[in-house]
Length: 104
Length: 163
Image 1 (spheres, rainbow over the protein chains, first blue to last red):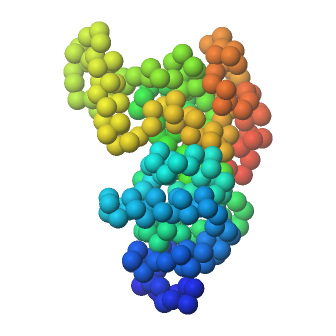
Image 2: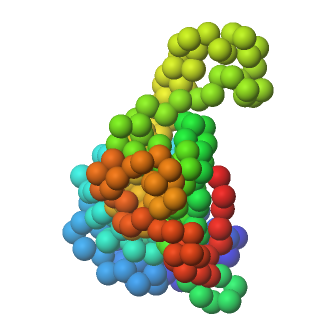
Image 3: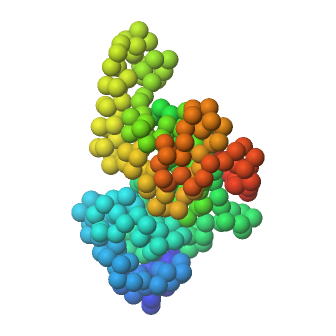
């Protein structure tokens, strides 16, 4: 597994650039991972991130996009504004979770 | 994190076009799900509805799509049983229940999701004429009605999937 220095921490990433250990995540890492994909995190992003991390902890998998929009208090349109380059993956990416397996 | 750039090997933004030509439940889902998944990973997506695929975007029909129980070997039931009145409705409702368990959206919701995702939805002019449909018969998410030549203009540079 490749490692990278993100926000001063040595972080292990999988082949797709997702963190392999969600426990190693912190807010500074989220900020830098978001910046690398051109996103500046806002309060709305944090709301999504908090839901994703909580849900992943409970369910053992990263939530799919529709699950986020049904439960995190953000609309589908919001998600595309927050993560224009692909809300299906990027929410999990900045949340330090594995790539979601969901189709919707 | 190179994979976050939705670009093809030629470094142009990727674009997919899905043509939905069938109106059964089992043929509606693959096209809609694939188009939506493209948007989810940042790929531009367009869906063109034609022929029986018009049912997917026709207000009166979209939430009543059925699975074919006759002439469908995958159903695993003999055709004479599949032809009993109500069998198709029964099979369809069973399939919809399974989809709910998987948290799959209904067809009308999936059309809404596609619109919210920024996918462009188009209807086929010839199919509109043939089935005597007007714009009012179609869901408002339909961006425009295209003839076959306009379709090719809109589809320029895209990977095309026919369902």
